[in-house]
Length: 331
Image 1 (spheres, rainbow, N blue to C red):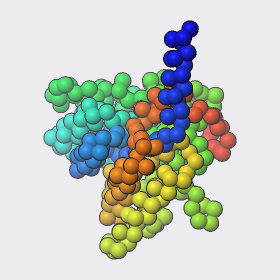
Image 2: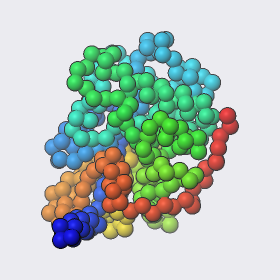
Image 3: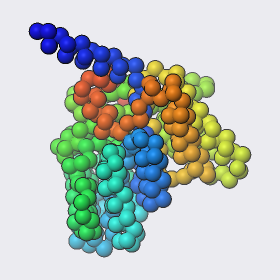
Image 4: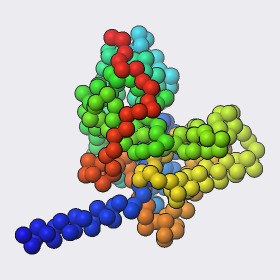
């Protein structure tokens, strides 16, 4: 009995420590740029944190391979809004970076294949999309003669839809293909949602309240659109201003936001002179270099967030309102 009491006390103490902690999940969509693979992985390793990478299958397969393993979605063959892989040497290097990311404790998630609007997918589209992604992930190491690599579809349990676009069939088939969580929505208020009576948790991108009662998704592209209507600027003073602005919004949310978890979405694209990548790095360094900030912060991967959610450390409140989505799509 005494031993049981001691265990319960220790458990309560550990939970109280977690309760005061703020978690930050930094995620990247895309995965094409070899330079950004190297920079982001080096930055994470140097600062002892983990990132999450939602990768796109076309960057890992050549056009030649499509002749024997075609991709069919939305009544089109081998068509993608993204470019297919360049030469095989660059594809191989990209695969090696994914293996390195896994080895160093980062999360690899799926950003699907064609970068289409999933809300328009039929059931068969979802099956084809997820099957093709699975094929690519399960064959890269062997096909490109990479030894000791751990990349496989079994390592990928999280999904972020291109354009953040989903429908109910998508959630059904994600679960059928072994995914454990989705990260495709945005939410101004809370951390975890459930939809359509599904037990597949959804970790939404954070949203910030800005002036005039407007909100903006905590994603670099949305700031790029806000700052310059998604048109590149070359004015060095503006680049500095946008860098500082992004950092300050991130820091303000970390210091004064009420949510337990902040989920940030960046891309490998360096919009507005890399303002948002540099602003993100500045935010992370500001937190880590400040003793008071750092003791209450943990930069974690999305898979680690899922583990904390399953343990009950991240709150499990389920919110269903404020989402407009078709309940089903046509067969």
